[in-house]
Length: 360
Image (cartoon, rainbow, N blue to C red):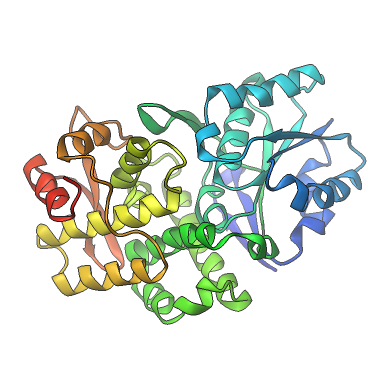
């Protein structure tokens, strides 16, 4: 097992990475002071891992209950968030209740938002079971739900007590979900560590087959990068926004298609191609670098051609982005492979990029 620390002063917390961690009560020591524990999970994950996690948590001597939500991005909304509050209030949860998010990014985001909101804030633990959640969404305290007009536009920053990434859960991931998680792994190399991107490129097949050693390194290095960024900029006032490379385009794809039609990582993968294309168009990376990045994303079985919404619809969707200021969209662009920055770009240049990419 590897342990990292997200350094946020009094709100610092550990990230545990290894196999079989769901079965280790010592990692859930933050629950010892809880009056009750609620596992929030979904219909796909519950039959796979909820019994084991319940058994582990029951050794702490606390009442353990489950809240089981439907599985999918389309359920990441007010209606289904309310199901968590309904269960907590029905069973008399209090300010010492602990929530445990067992699932992917949707469950983690919704559980965290419920924890941030219930009684104005209770504690929670992340137990991410997808690659995307282990390398990205479980770390950093971003929580929230989607709105029909924009992804993740309603939420709060609320840090977990711990992140427990059991690598064994990745063995049950469908290939499409695994590829979606690899998009965020690629992103970390592209924006922060060119040598890591070299390693990803050299280990494509091992990653696609969920090789144990390769996956352990991918998760560890991704968490190292993200935890360092979050520690430096918790609330996305500066450098943390670079973690959104590919997301402005990607979120537009998700909203335009209808949440759940493309997986988040699929949309981000395609969004990174668009972001790199825009960076190349501005003279910040070379055509060869754009081609290389496109090939890496495609080799992970991710889409590289955006849906054809038309440029007007894309621009409309991208206006609903958390990086938009005063009506101006700010994009994460590549200065070079391994380094990103944020800047405003003329709409005409963005439209050229969309047209050249086949989005029109």
